[in-house]
Image 1: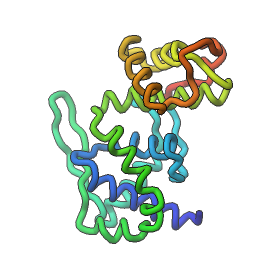
Image 2: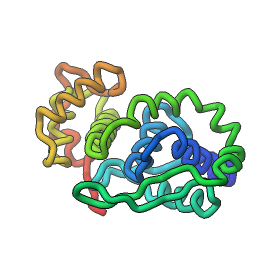
Image 3: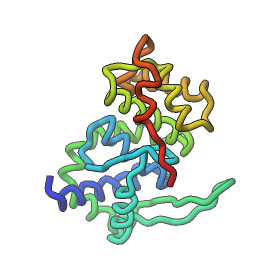
Length: 204
């Protein structure tokens, strides 16, 4: 895909998500892009790394800024009980931004709709946890043919100690039951030590 086509596709998806997901925030946008690329193989061309709040690529925010500059979305600062955050809404020029990537949107619409239905209603904390579980699942696949659920839970807690072991296990079991985790099994597998050095969390 040519760079200009990829850019149009990314911006079209962001504009589409701003319409499909009420109260869309930056964390949710980041994770929905990650899930689309990682779980449904939507070719967005991002390079996600595990950061403080889960998988992150600054290019997603750069693309968001580009869409906002074109009038495809508008962001506003909102106050939550304990913090502030940005809420992303469709802009006056959402349609032409989506139209520029219409072929891409049509080709991957079912995948993106699945991602929205599966994850868009999660809280920011749940999105952080679930996306980290998915990321660690993919790391296990990179260094071994299979891993156990217990190994995954341990590795996630190593990089996300503010989540308890029962919280992580419950979410991981749900994802495994749905077939979302494709590289771990509830059986014997590689030890946590064998993949420990490959799962690192960067602050930002």
